[in-house]
Length: 297
Image (tube, rainbow, N blue to C red; front, side, top):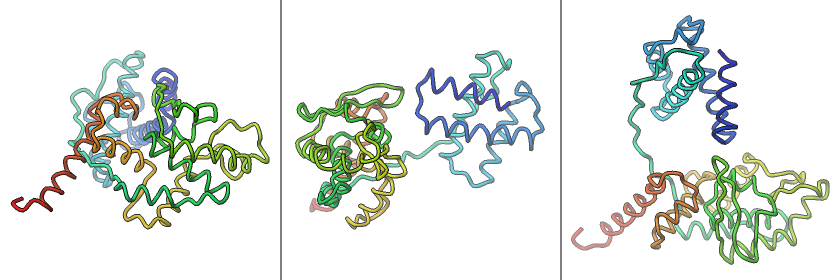
């Protein structure tokens, strides 16, 4: 059974162009699914899987205290697996037909106020190569709304400071060109001129724009540690995730009258409904302001 999981993962990576994080999630979910089928249901071949077995698996996840969001993700992984098996003629039926995902309440992403963003961006002090790098990263994230994975995957050649744009490869290997302003351009220029070479003493051939103390491409975990440290120094309340600046970028653009379609293109969302959640945030904020300040609210 496990070899079919690997075939699916290869298909999702090469044909669908899904990110490594997504591939890893599929693999983890499907390994737990196959383990359940073997150990609990006694299933020996995938063609023996019935709808009732999948329902039992979902109940098992619920009994383990898994959230509706996690269960919905397992359903999506399992459905993709069985559809793949049917298409490849490994099985004769798709037992996931008519299995519905749990209804999820759409959580509004956390965003920072403009003042909080300003405070965070001013926290890295450009007095050494670490401060120059960290400031350039934060400025670029907020200026473009790119994902952290896209940030750390970026090479020096993807930045054009003179014209003020960055070339970004997003999900599904979809390329997009995103503009950035003078503040981000200045921070990136200072980092390239006075900061990056200090990191490259042992690795002059590294193409990555943002590198770590070893002169290698900065990892997602490395960025996450930097962000947590800076958020603590900036005294920002609540959890600050690598996606927070992306959310704030979108919400602040829409709040100031940006076109929804343009924001969708800059974020790289395939479906505009994904972008529309930021309009909900804006409307919620307007409602709060109205209730607070209108005398007859």
